[in-house]
Image 1 (cartoon, rainbow, N blue to C red):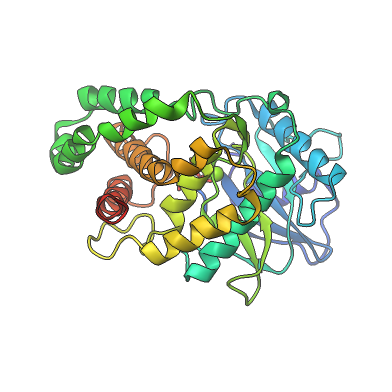
Image 2: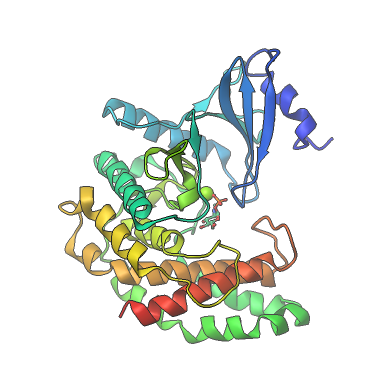
Length: 343
Ligand code: GN1
Ligand code: MG
């Protein structure tokens, strides 16, 4: 029996609490890795998720990392929503090995794309504040939820391997993108020159705009930062770069169109927002390399999407056959404009 089928949602949830007459659920379409459902019972809402165990190979680690960060934030009186994994009736945090239940920030909404520089500013400020609260949590308390997640040289090598194993058809259709990525390896080389000097901190590692919950009917008031599965030890510049990737993109992540891709206005707002809480906490080498971090993360994300396309779409969920290629094109177009405008 395929336990991920929606008809099992009620039965999985019933291992948390009795199903009441107002029980309902809805599949959420955001996220490329896990399957998420919004569940309501007794007028309370939760997120029920089937974790993708081929990406997150050790689910105990992500559960433990979330628990560790939640309790740290509570002990510091973090003033916003704190994500928590909720125990099922037998005391375990995972049901049937891959299902988990999370608390939910009520009356919130998400955006797939940034609406305005003000919104970029607010989200970056919110993330900077989150970092400020994590500053005194020992980085060794978190274990790697995905080994080599931040190993950009491995990502490049995996891309090169995919060129050897991909089908003729996929290689042909993406030849321009392959050529672009191979000819811009200098971005990675520039990064390699500074990376060993960057301080290690606890980072979120996926702060794209859709991972912020905004108050309903507000595009600026943020209630929560969610998706804590990739909380890990790494450089804070990865978080900054990932925000650049997401917040400066005028287009949706799978829109392959070219022209008017990068918003310099959003970029400036985001930088200002990020530094709001962190100005005095960042090391000079971090402040000096913010632009490079933006380019690097977009470059690596393009590589990740294209590698997955060449490998036959085995990592990211897709809804149509060229979606990963379109996602890669979108990142490349964004990067092209960044290279022009951020010099
Ligand atoms: C994935 O599943 P989701 O949307 O939270 C990916 C991120 C990428 C992002 C691109 C574990 O995140 O690293 O930046 O897609 N997560 C993992 O949208 O690979
Ligand atoms: Mg994520």
